[in-house]
Image (tube, rainbow, N blue to C red; front, side):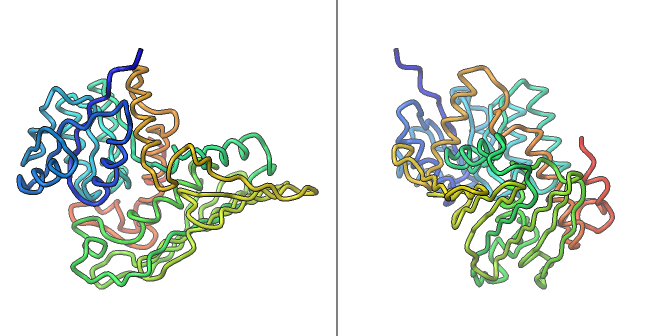
Length: 348
């Protein structure tokens, strides 16, 4: 017997919302029943495009819609705390885009709201749900390359982005780190957990956001991660994981790879490729499927994208901003000022 479809609400109507909804409508066990925007015109156009029955011109109406099983929050990350918080307060389950929030304080608040209401909450870190990334992690966890010594990852766009673009706007959480750097940081922490120390340097824009950032993370084991993100130079989006007994290379698109190569000392290289049956490599369907699996199982968080892992990534992003001196409007002096490194690295 087929399981009942999971009913989705979409909050925001930008490019990532459209990409996610396009994947959702192709899933037989998903139903998109409502969309909300701050503009009724935008909500109506989105609803017509995807055949969605209800369109709301304000977020609260979507949050209060009791016919929705889970809301996908697809706003820019500066609005995640408000949008996801509104939905959680109304008792909705939430999948929230990354970066999860502007800072770890906001992330802690969302997690606390979800736990207080007994609601499901997950960061939309689709990389963690990707089958080939999961395969890579399983190989590392099983000791295929020995003890991890070093992780490298980069994600950069060539731009240029004008000053009015959201990526240059401090009020929208602009900069390379939260938009792109969240991927290299999340990749490193997927394999090594939260670092014990963070060093970073950045090139800042006149507006005060990071145009490119390099970070060196370190762990008590001696492992290091060299990470880079940029909105002023296109990079290979490559990654490598070096261990005491070998190496894994992801030549491009490490957060949605089509292949990677395992090099084990004394053995021929082994290539692992994406299964065509898993769908397009840029598909967001895997994270949607994980949300629906968890909801049907009665889980309030996903073991693939656990909330403690999301909080740990947010603490690292805070620490990096702390080192390079990026602070967003409304943040406290400890958030991005160069004064809060120890606090940012202290687990909640």
